[in-house]
Image (cartoon, rainbow, N blue to C red):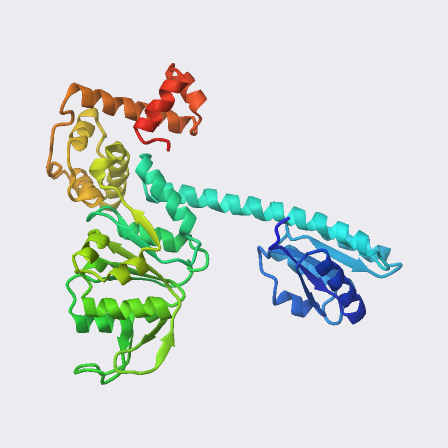
Length: 440
């Protein structure tokens, strides 16, 4: 039983309420006691981490009415009804209405605790199943948005799932076009507490100190020439949600100091004002440069780097995950075909060979642009094209890695089944999986 689960006790008799409350506390079970159904509803939302124990006869809304209301909003929530002596008819009606169980007065503490523990265990299992289902749904959503079966992308998706729901700042590192903003958006969308709030993006590149100051912090009317009315800044607008700062490496040093203060104090001051405004937003920063090296060179504040680098997600360049190129290209041509109302070009072996030959300095963005051109019938080849196989050994190794990865994925990571399917020894397969970075 999870220690986080709480018993919400609803009893208008102060003596009985105190007795039950003390019994639960002595048993180590968290309890929240109230004297009416109306007071209880203020604490009850779908997914409530606990159970409800309610007297049948209450002032205002009675226990049966409360049960009906809870069944409508959270039918899996266990509700235990306390009935008076002789209220058998009401108890039967409550069970038919969906009550988990009922206790008839007078009852012993031992009997009450036994029923409550069973209900808590049921609730714990229900919440665990729901959490697992949400995580699987999130995983499926991520796989659709961040395409790729390469080990690098699997690692990226796992990291996103691990931290999306945590109130922690994130630093995303990656070359131009690797999908840093897409990762930031996924972090926001999968964070249940921030998903419904604002997602605010700002590119810090090429902005003067004054303009960036106004964009981030806002300003009061008359703060500078041309400031005719108050303006809410990006940080304040992102309150409760997510602030995405792209190309943070290009932020002027003077602004880095102000940003560091915000991250430490979670307060801002609009330009031209001395009034502090509390803000609570997740900050996701992205950089195409190695900020640690930039800090060592004196081009980026080391204290800001360490403050941003709480959780780090590194996006691999496309040339380091070539096995993902066919699937990405297929999805991009499908999207472009819908967008331009054109037929999707076939993904031929020859086309794959040409795609795999590119070095892709523009990464996923470049591949998407190429897919658009192919759908529109515009002749264009990948930039920085190289030979697919520099040697026979390279070609064989690339083919072997793709073959093993495909079968390993198909067998859901089971080494024994993969070895049987590939007709190879398990020890040999294990060594190759480690060699190609498919397992740790």
